[in-house]
Length: 267
Ligand code: OAD
Image (cartoon, rainbow, N blue to C red; front, side):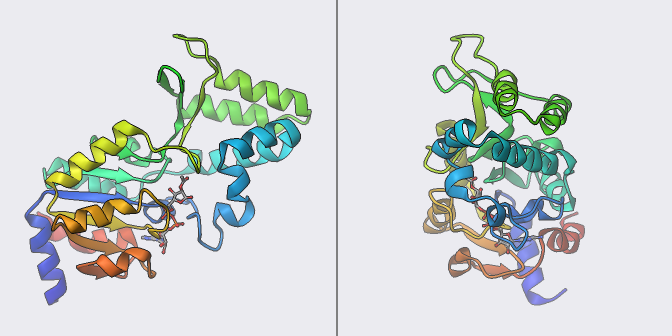
């Protein structure tokens, strides 16, 4: 074991680890990153497809493009399974070394592999909620699969819109139309998830920043908050990122490669 790995292992053995994750941790599950070569935002303009105004515009003016976007992105989520890195974080939680995970990802993969303490600061693509009374429901992969199957076949603009609104449904408490649980650009981050993130960071000794470019705010401010509190920052990313400047340990590896190397030393 080289000196850097030795130091990293002893740091992790001290526990009180928090993970701050981005799209890179799910890349090996088959979900393209946002800004990578095959990223979603290369094909779909985020100022349209990742904003509420844009989605409403598409619903009215271009339901076929909205259908293609929904079908393509949900097929990717539905086909993805947690990978070694997701399971490694679950293992660290089971060993009481990890306090919690703060994720920018909406793919549900941390919950799908059994992690318990997860703050989803950009929401969850499987969740639908009422923005008036906060009632929420998590749809099963099966429900989403059958929705996508129907939507994919639909050619009529009117029936596409009707199908989407029917699937969203209404709040059983206040009858308002339910909305996607994804946090779109320009929307506030969910208060509870943010509070949970700060709770994790306030107890942390080490922050593992895994697979994020660190360019999207306010999410990217969390590692800086941790750094100011004296938390050791470990950046795990095969490429350069904005967070490199605050890294105490810079690990130029893919997430699963890093964990395959490190986990055996953690007992
Ligand atoms: P990005 O696509 O911006 O960055 C992904 C990062 O993962 C890059 O720095 C890659 O180098 C790195 N990466 C790729 N493969 C990896 C691997 N196998 N292991 C480790 N790292 C790897 O994605 P995010 O930083 O997550 O926001 O983007 C942040 C936010 O921007 C997203 O949550 C989303 C997006 O627009 C919203 O939807 C609100």
